[in-house]
Amino acid sequence: MTQLANPDLAARARTLLDLHEAPEILTLANVWDVVSAQVVADTGARALATASHSIASSFGYADGENIPLELHLDMVRRIVQAVDLPVSMDFEAGYGNPGETARRAIEIGVVGGNLEDQMKPLDQAVAAVEAVMAAGREAGIEFVLNARTDAVLRADKGAPRAQTIDEAIRRGRAFLEAGAPVVFVPGLVARDEIQTVAQAFGPRKLTVISVPGVSLPVSELQELGVARVSTGPFTQRVALTALQDAAAALLAGGTLPAGTRPLN
Picture 1: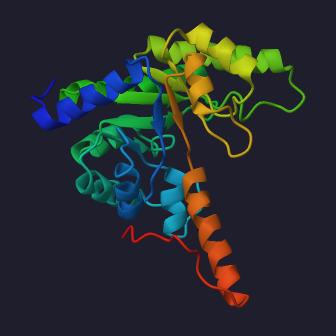
Picture 2: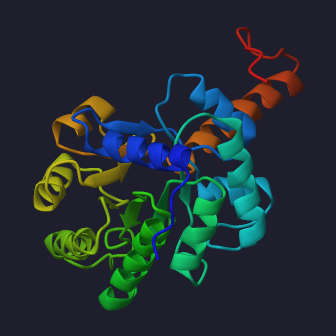
C-alpha cells in the first residue's frame, strides 16, 4: 500500500527527477562523508550522489558490498542530514534484497539510487529494478533509480564491440521499461558509442561516468543527449592525490600548498 509521503521527501524526489529530465545535463561530483558533501554542496551543486567505493574505502573495506550495510547506511544518513539537497545513494547490487535496501535508504531521506545488474540473468535484473521502484511507490515518492548495467565493464575482451554495445542497449531498455528513469552504463567513453546508446534509450535517459583524462567534457556529453554524468570514486581519488602530493612535498623539505582554503 502506498504511504502518505513526507512532503519534504517527496519534493526532493521530484526535484531530483526534474533535474534528470531537464535539457541541462545533471553533473554529480560523488561524495563519501559529511565534509565532502558539504564542500561539494557549497559549489552550487543541485544534488548529491554518494560513492559506495569511496565510503567503503573510508572505513577500510574493499568495494563490492564488503562494508556492512548498517555502516554504509549510517554514513549516508549523516550526509543527508548535513545538506539541503536531494541525495542519491549507490547501494551497489542491493545487498541481497534491493527492495528492502531501497526502503531502508528512503527511510533515512535518500530519494534516488544506483543499482548494479552485475550481468545477472536479465529477468532477475529486471525484477530487482521493479523491487526498487515498488519501494519508492510504497513510500509515496518518485524514486529516481539510476539502473546500472555492467554490460560494457564486464564484456569479454575478445567480444565484438558492437555486440557489447547492443547488449548494453538491450538491458538498459529492459530497465527503462521496468520503470527506471535513467540507465547508467559505465565504460562508455567514446563519442560514437555514447551517441549510439543515448539515441537508443531516448532523450535524457543515459548516465555515464567521467573518467580522468579519458572522458569527454560535460558540455559535449550534454550535446549528445546524456542525462547525467557522475564521478564515482574518482572525486575521492582527486582528494587523495592532492593529499599525498602535499605530504610528499612537505616530507621532502617543502611546505603545504599556497592557496589551501579552510573548507572545514
